[in-house]
Amino acid sequence: MDIAYANVTDRMIHNYDDGSKKEFLISGLMDMSESGLFTESLLTGYIREKTMLNDSAYTVNVSFTEEFYIDNGPDLPSNKYIYVKNQVIEYNFISGNLKIIQNNNFTSIWEAYYTAITDVYHEAVTNNTLNETHEMVLKEVFSFEPQSYEMAGEVQEFVTNNTSETQSVLVRLNHSAAFTEYNAEGEVSGSGVYTYQSTDYPDDNVTITLWLHYK
Image 1: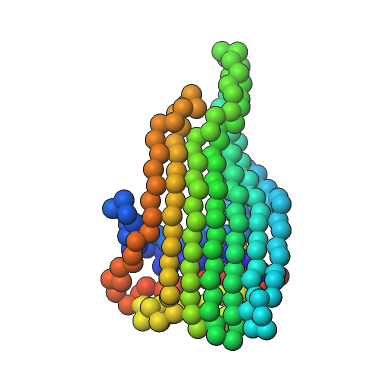
Image 2: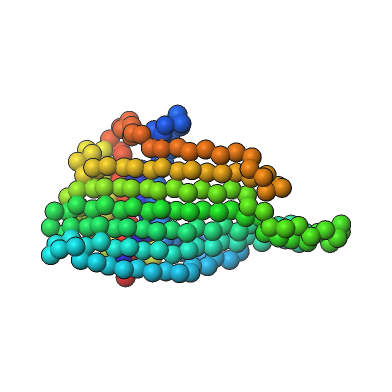
């Protein structure tokens, strides 16, 4: 089991301590090779360990690294994106209590390249980094349905249909992030942190979507 995807709607209705509104979205293990966005993608270091906590509850620890490349052509640097992800899933199949946590350590790099017309070799430079942790805690989660989606593959899906259902199962959300930006010389040009505070419920269409890989 691992987390493919989770959200509390795809709308920016979640309030953060920096004054912004953002999505609450966990992008887990997805197959991006057919997305058309990247020249090459690579999955390495996939490890999954399941431990029974008692007769009715277990925890699953998952870790993996995703790398994506965009070839921008001759005399230009390629983009390299690295995601190091660690997931924890705790589930009690009697009570339906479910907790999912994902830490994502992201690095964006301009790769080394050579400019032939000026005969200049350019070293690789980090563009930006992001370290973030999402947590979603739900209760009374029983109704998983098998589904198949492009890029996610075969998953077990849990969804709520409206705001009332969402509020009845949602126990807690947490999301904290720290980012650093760099200039072309590799010097820090900006940084910041932000933390989830609360969620607005503007209408009856605030729903939860959760996809888990079981194979």
